[in-house]
Image (cartoon, rainbow, N blue to C red; front, side, top):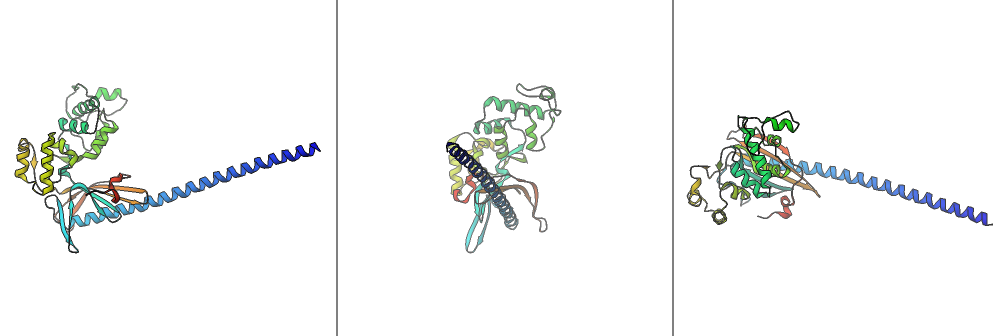
Length: 315
């Protein structure tokens, strides 16, 4: 009798173990299926967001190509409303997303090399001074034609010691991305350069489109002057006379123009559910009927920060 009970007990344990294995496998299969469904939904949402971002870019290009540039951007009437798009990187809410437009005369130029202003920019991004000096001195060596190393810089020998075959160009760099090759580059330095530096030549400044984050870098570290600058700009009273009263030291060191350049950086962000897609392009606009613009640089820049979402826009 006890033998039969033992057999029944062993059978019960075996049955429970088999049931547990079946449940575990079922849960694993369910989890895998759910994961694949989730991945498929994310891919679908990503494609939809990408299409929306592309549509926003094309819509923006069309509107910019049929309206004259004035002062800080463009202005036109539609359905008895006056619409204004500013070229100072402020978000412009549109259907399915938002667009930012930046006049390249309102951001930091790639050329010429200005170590003092770049150091200010890096300081603003919280970059360690020693990291900043290594990169800036190496950038100086990348540019100059001699083989004399700056204090924290790097000539060809240093690059060979790093295990790379390239060395300093001994001339101006040809793109922002080339700066990734320079000794001393760090993720934080690249973040500052990628966000604030544009592929342009010379300090041609449009105060009306100058990005607010760059005011202490491009103009002055004097907080009171910057506050006055922003007040005049907000009131619509910022003009050449007012600007040079605030910053007389820049009368001969910068080309100041109160009209946008023809080169704009356009960044469109669109979302589908929780998926955000951002696309960017640099465009040169030309007053020609059949070729009103030329795209100089174009890239997908992945996701966008929450501030680009319509729900987070602050005008």
